[in-house]
Image 1 (cartoon, rainbow, N blue to C red):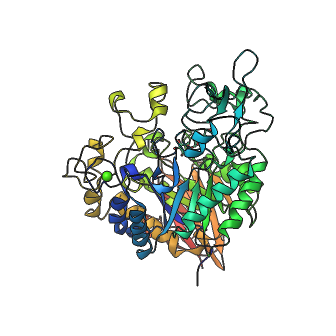
Image 2: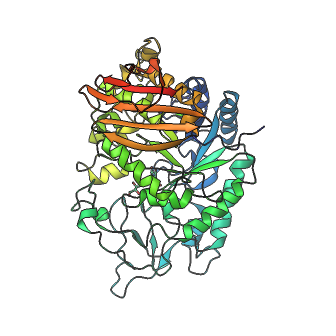
Image 3: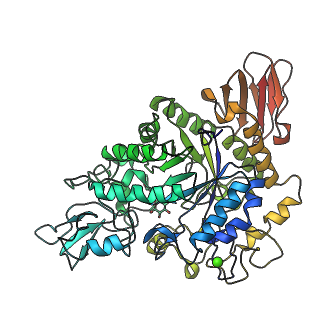
Length: 538
Ligand code: TEU
Ligand code: CA
């Protein structure tokens, strides 16, 4: 029987195809390379892979600018290679999720080429076009995440078009149902080809306000400056009309209805919103006709993840409702790797790995996270990310988390490629290569395997509810419960020892392979630095 609920509590391994494994020595990872490494991915014990975009693309945003949704970019291979990859994944019991970038296309997509050709062609209204103000300036004050106004002047049509990201990523007009239908056809194409699910890029950007009203300024106390406002004022605006429009829900319901025609397809929607993230997560995932889960940004920020912060996030999540299903991540292809971002000592990396595997929700692991890779130092001359090139040195972009995966220490490119890698392999990373950690029983890689296996063995962790997430000083603790199984999870999120009292009841300490602390008969826990305690109710 098909398990329709496979995504609930799943561990999803994110693969950035350019940087995973190169099979033909051109210095760029590809689909056959991924297929060749499926055994490794399966050995981690994860449930699924999410592959960042591999579709035909001019690569202005490294694949997040799609010019043909139904084909593979020659750089990554062919549709036949994709079939090989799906077969390899399924052979190892892994689900395949692909990354659908539906909010915008590349400016080289045939839809856009047609749309820009006149104001009267059949696709004239497929993108968000608007006249200039009388003085020639853009129709409103919306800004692009990647810098400057969100509007680009097109001399041919004598109009502006909307782009929330690069100028080469024009936003589709979701108010037009033909656009929606075309995107659902794309989705069906991949479902028919055997994919098990989707990561949906920027679902909160699908619709733009029909009247294109100006965005208000964001109150100072809500501003979250990752980049100085003098450099990029994006975070000083409340994206009230360019984002999070109520109509998104209606489209997502159409999307879900299509998925439900297939036996067990699931999706995770990406909702990046510094202010309303959890509220939107609740709105988009609560109920069987909504998206299955939302990708949560709460643990991707610079804010140090201490016990109080984790408790606070879960308390907020309780407000949005127990129905909502988050998908947590500490690292991805857009943010600084978390070991560097949070300056974690090795013992803390282990604690965080265990914690991630104990949270209610699903989990994404980003390639190399299981090796404890740090953010790579990429010199300006080697930068590839347009976001980094624009804002250097205030913001160094996303290349530091996108350098190639390291498989072998002895090989100069870490076994990634026999060619010249598109981004340099970090020399520091070589010490953490898979081959090194495989042969060390106490390595972080083995710790991740143990933590993932621990999660998989306990339905309370994958499917269970939690009885409130609490912070007692530096100690984070909660219970997880499912079908008569109750687990207790406690984490000393600090480099100083700590005393903690377990809840009433008889508990058997488990998870010794994860360094679980033993308790006194009275339930006293003497935590060492960054130690955890996992226990099962008798
Ligand atoms: O990222 C979306 C994105 O950039 C947001 O998370 C943004 O940082 C946030 O909303 C700011 O408030 C996705 C992809 O992951 C990224 O690689 C692409 O560049 C982007 O979409 C555009 O497709
Ligand atoms: Ca290649």
